[in-house]
Length: 115
Length: 191
Image (cartoon, rainbow over all chains, first blue to last red):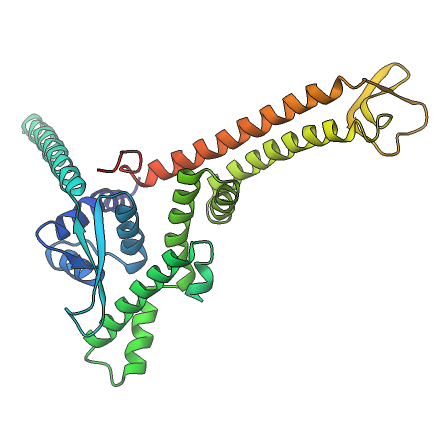
């Protein structure tokens, strides 16, 4: 497996978590989520990727979508976490932390063996 | 073009998707300050958005599969299988296998339905005591005997319906599996 392919899989695996984190503090619309992810991470997300994911998370009850007309020059579709989505995000974060901890442990063990 | 590509979706869902993409394009055009005019900005944004067909496929395949899994309706399942068959290799082969199942089941039911109408043309076709084929032949070759009385009807009806039900369940299971592969939250009950 090439490095690029692996990085792509890693990004893909973390994308849903990143989207949920982006809308966790306050509702955001599609382009705002893209900009937020670009600003804080190297997750370059295309529209063709993010909108179907947002639509799916909405259908699954993790996000709630709402058209708001008065917060910009034209109506925008804002996404916010539902109660279920908040629970899902908490679980994902717990798993993510546990996973990272294990990988870091492995890296440390490997480095100790090397030295 | 995007609208045409979203034709598989329920009308309100397609309209909502179009409205969202339109809102996105407007926003991007407004933020593209360096371009000399709105037309150039629009062309650049559309270029970055990617081919409309690809965006539409990403939307519609997931939603069509969702509808098929949730409702289990024949039309929705056929649409979802068609979408997957035309966009993924795995979907193509799965749909091919499922089509064989549906056609076999339907053929068995048709044999049962044709038996009372053409009793001499439906059953086991035997030539010189050797079974050659089974089913319905409107013009059997000379020297062919037809074995099988009216018992063919219930047997073929049961076999045909069993194959149809099993294939339909297989189709739903395949679509559920495909959906769970892309959406880990799909199987959980909504709060």
